Image 1: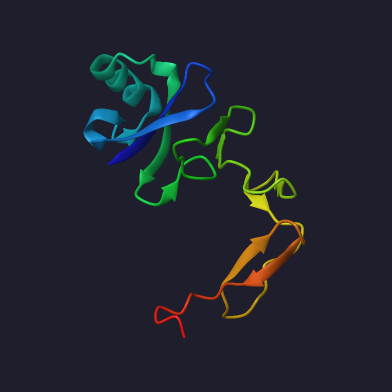
Image 2 (image 1 turned 60 degrees about the vertical axis):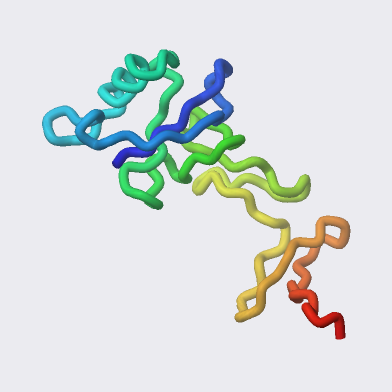
Length: 131
């Protein structure tokens, strides 16, 4: 299966994700984006150039990151980029992933980002018994 991202008219915003049988996207025994785009255009009526391959295998990104609804397609970087999670985070130009201003702690604990204090805070599950 090939996974395609459908872009909005702006050519940037991912508005849908669709799985396509590899046979519908193959030319000379290789997955070919243009063949897949043509198939999707004929079957969905959405302009061919607004379909981009996100994954060829489930979970294996084709363009640096797998696409998600609300993500941005950056044609200069040829990458899908998630929405910025916090104002203080910056985009890593190589991976096209957002990075916190402070590295995630390297231990076995789970953390949440505290934007106000610019730090990682240990995530604690609430006590279901309220004790």
